[in-house]
Length: 265
Image 1 (cartoon, one colour):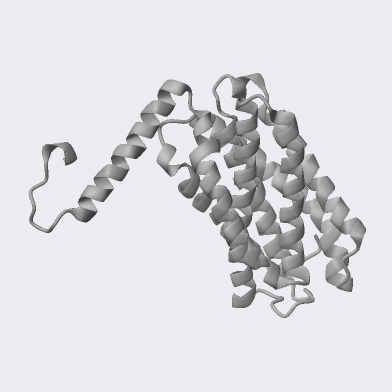
Image 2 (tube, rainbow, N blue to C red; image 1 turned 30 degrees about the vertical axis):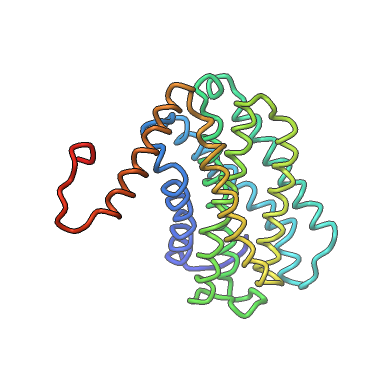
């Protein structure tokens, strides 16, 4: 990468990047605790971290280095990012369609965690790049402006990758993985292009990340992630969610000092 940052700065930026894993895990799978296959999810998180590291190197070599030095975005760079997105989707397909993952209904949740890992490492790498004092934009160097941009990317890039990973995993459970694999690859290419253009030439593009993440999360939470549960477990999960919502509503409506009914205890 060729960025001569002090070791402590690199460690801080990597730690900030990994915050995306915590936020995405808590946000997407906290309500499913105890219902999904935790070992598979954890193992695929590690796969995602490795895949994200290799992806970041290619992204740097094929896009960032040239754009950062010239300020010019060539059409070939855009096409290469779509190629990387398709290659990532192909690797997700290969890892999530293995028999040991399929028989446990684990592809959706494992795809989610693998996306989190991949997105977090990519975000860490991009922050290290932006911390380079020679970075061409006004927020170059290790400062609050750069960290602000980096945290923004860290919160939303892993989440978007996780959403697409759960989509791919859900398609495997529903036995239609090939068509979704190609679509997922294209969407991953869009995410890369959006983020890379946002940090190199057009920062305003980063404002698209939050609504995209919120929209995708709403679908993943209701449709894709629950498909990781076998029918009987899914019924119990939906019953638990329904009861939690009812208890929360009752608690909000209850007046101070009112007796709690036995069903709410």
